[in-house]
Amino acid sequence: MNREKYSRQLLFREIGEAGQERLRQSRVLVIGCGALGAAQVEMLARAGVGFLRLVDRDFVEESNLQRQIMFEERDALERLPKAIACARRVARINSDVRAEAVVADVNEKNIERLIADVDLVLDGTDNFETRYLINDACVKHEKPWIYGAAVGAYGLTMTIRPGITPCLRCVFEKIPPPGSSPTCDTAGIILPIVLFIASIQVTEAIKLLIGRTEKLHSGLIQVDAWEMSVHRVSLQQVRERADCPACHHRRFEFLEVGRRQSALTLCGRNAVHISSAGDVSLDLREIAERLKPLGEVTLKEFLLVFRVNGYELNLFPDGHCIIKGTEDMTLARSLYARYIGM
Image 1: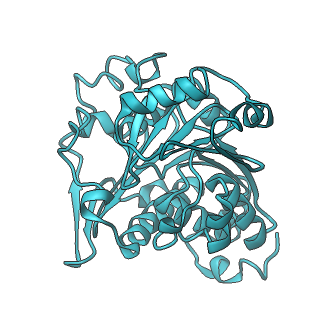
Image 2: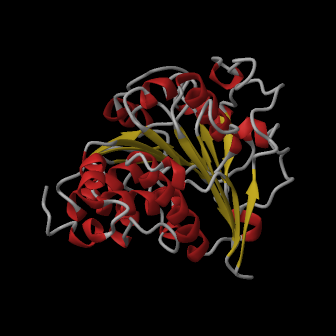
């Protein structure tokens, strides 16, 4: 252990040398490397968590820079996948930490594999569909995970320990219907709330990883950074819901193949994300050659960009695609089928 590197953290008696060594041996999965995820990764890397698996389906854009602290202007210019950009920054921050970048959509086909060998999962996503998927996988395999969300100046977080605390579906029984909740598209977002929520998540993560579970906040934390209000809602009365599909009935609906949407509109982007139809590995160079006669093609190491008729298809090696220029999921699927052919 490099004592000088972690000297101030070692002086914090709640962690000390024993806690620091446990952090070094820990393995954490961060799902989503956008606003919350980027802040989580930065803090975990500096704290000396030994292994970070970073999963994200998206690439860096200029509009991300205001709130996604791992990224720089050059990442946006290169349209670097967020997971790759995060892993490269981790390498610059702390050579003690091994970061594994996974450029992929998290879905029912890969979630169980992604969580299999980690100690903890952190939520950096931006939609309830993926969070319910994480919840099902973590409850099934008894992996602790930490939920987080932020929009405008408001945020939520909750630490979930399967079999010990209520799970996400115990507290939020159903996915909110479309249009019922504010998004960054309708309400915007400021960086302070991102850092506020991520800081709580990472503090909880450190407690879990070093075995100080008696110090967990054990509630649902609600923060309004603009009004400077913080509320902790006790979950004692919720406990494990007797009718919870995941906790009580062990019915993991979101892990069923075909259960999730194959297309999702992206927050504030005038874009649709299309999941790949299966576990595939595409030859982007071959596809680029096929598309060149039809429109403008730009081929990068991890991304193929195809522009045609006012739309932009951003295709990744695992087959998932971000289609810009529309929020119509039917049209997006049609464009994907027409040009990618799956």
